[in-house]
View 1 (cartoon, rainbow, N blue to C red):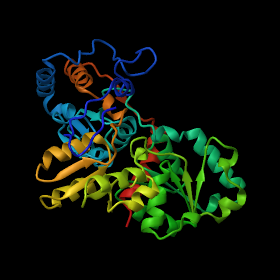
View 2 (cartoon, helix red, strand yellow):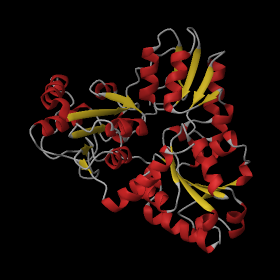
View 3 (cartoon, rainbow, N blue to C red):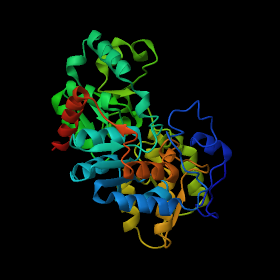
View 4 (cartoon, one colour):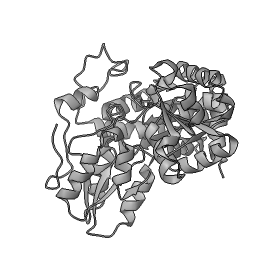
Length: 393
């Protein structure tokens, strides 16, 4: 993969390996969602932009297009609003007149939008293979087994589940059933403070790093207060004593993008760029967060760079599409990617212009495609957990 250094612009092009990870140049029979029913436009079609514009104009107010910050520029240009996953879900709920919500993001985000919007609205994901590796690291069956382990250890009644927004509807529903709450990277501290007022322990799903960083950095707990539950080991790889002593039971999950950043990445960029400030997402590893100058959510990163003085130097530890967009938006500042290697979110990048054009044209022709619909029982309890988050003090 190409290397991003301070001497290079951030116009990194994915290598053949990256294209494979993005679902391009792959065997369509082996990956659900790489090909769409009907004719998917060619990415080389010079008329894609105009086709998207015409289809979106034909749909008018019937369609509302949401674009996550990590999306490609070619997709973002057609988004009515941009933001992180929870902001976009709330934006969708605030547009009841829109018949179709086209969510340019990943599967769990579209599920959340379906939960928060009315039954008359239809949420569409342009490529069904746009999932989230972190969300997939915690299945309903695994989490139910974990609860059985906690019950057998005699601690379940003391445990309050807190699930990250980056989780499936099933996991959100589990959280609601057991009196827990959802959190985002922006309000994780408030969520944990609330949870510890309800019980003595927290089961944090599915991102271990956000849970650990928030508990240690923001709440003042120690690393010894945290244990890691591995769903692939008997009893999570933990003893009864460890479960009884722990305050934070962290699920063994992580973000495949933010998990790539290392302490070496931080040390290297400081050597290459004197005076650089390192700004990372709290999904990064604890040692990376500890070594950084600032830590915050996607929205925090955007606001921090907006407010930064001209001439300042920044190394950003988050998804590359967003870092490139921020660098383009702030030519008066030196903004570089924290790692030396390309780090796209491979599943997020499945939503490209051909898939968006296919989606919009299908809807304009009256064909509902790729609808994301959460079943009523799951929706009921997932909504309870989301509403608890909205009610956080």
